[in-house]
Image 1 (cartoon, one colour):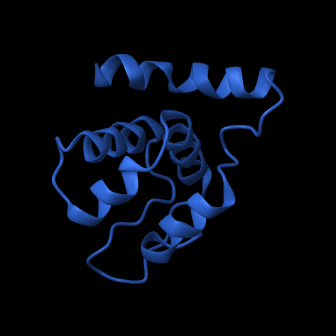
Image 2: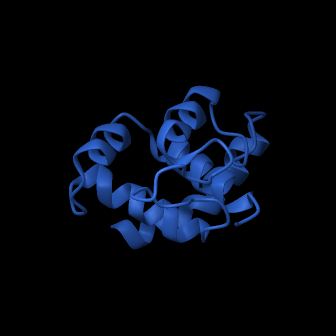
Length: 103
């Protein structure tokens, strides 16, 4: 199931674009702010215990968020955050962070 959803991420972004919704690289502002609290708005975490997201592979980020959301990957805070996001929001965040320059 996760593979099937990961393969649809680009299609979801295209569908959103064609529907006149924001492009996948422009997630809802509050989602970026919520993620940015730990991972940095620029995708560079300020805490050494938190991973940088800037420049990460989009599919990897998408799949990991789905794993947190389903509980397959264990992390209390990430599960809480991911459960509140739609697949479209997860795809948009993955595209956003993947588009940022890595450090």
